[in-house]
Image: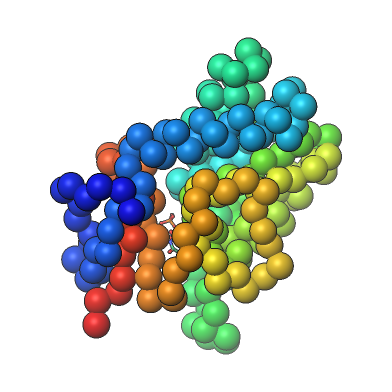
Amino acid sequence: MSENTEVKATPNLRLKGRLMSASEIERTLVRLAHEIVERNNGGTNLGLVGIKRRGVPLAQRLAAHIAKIEKHPVDTGVLDIAFYRDDLSTRDIRPVVTPGALGFDVNGRDIILMDDVLYTGRTIRAALDALFAHGRPKSVQLLVLIDRGHRELPIQATFVGRHIPTSRREIIEVKLNEIDGQEEVLLVELAD
Ligand SMILES: O=P(O)(O)OC[C@H]1O[C@H](OP(=O)(O)OP(=O)(O)O)[C@H](O)[C@@H]1O
Ligand SMILES: O=c1cc[nH]c(=O)[nH]1
């Protein structure tokens, strides 16, 4: 855990600690940008696709870092995946793709899907379906800021900011300035 100052969790959740500060998030994104460039031969064929909501600022920030490192612009796009609860049949929670423009042509591109947290893998499974509805990429890699384990599908990330082993009662809360007006990663637990 990083040093804890004035961190607060949502009321029905118990704060267990701060996993990353703003500067730690920033340093991690810079490292991930270098890893992406190294693995993708400079990244000229890359397209970064952020999963709404917090994957979107992550993709934009990583595109800016890669553009700075490699001195070329990097396309970014958005996948919008809404969740609904299917109470009538399975009581399962299924991600649903909201149709809409992605932002650039994915055909033939090396795509990096981006999200803040990887947990069961169901969001990523739906995102892959959504992505291929937009076209046929040359390759797809996955980047997540936090991998907390507990996969229910055979999905793994190509680039990981931090591996955080968790219990199922725990929740990772990623807070990003663009969406939350604050910047940190918290570990919280459902209160009894
Ligand atoms: O691997 P999974 O089990 O699919 O879980 C990971 C997803 O859960 C979170 O989204 P959440 O539903 O909390 O929406 P939000 O980030 O927009 O609040 C997170 O942002 C990932 O998209
Ligand atoms: O702990 C979790 C699990 C899924 N999504 C999150 O944002 N946090």
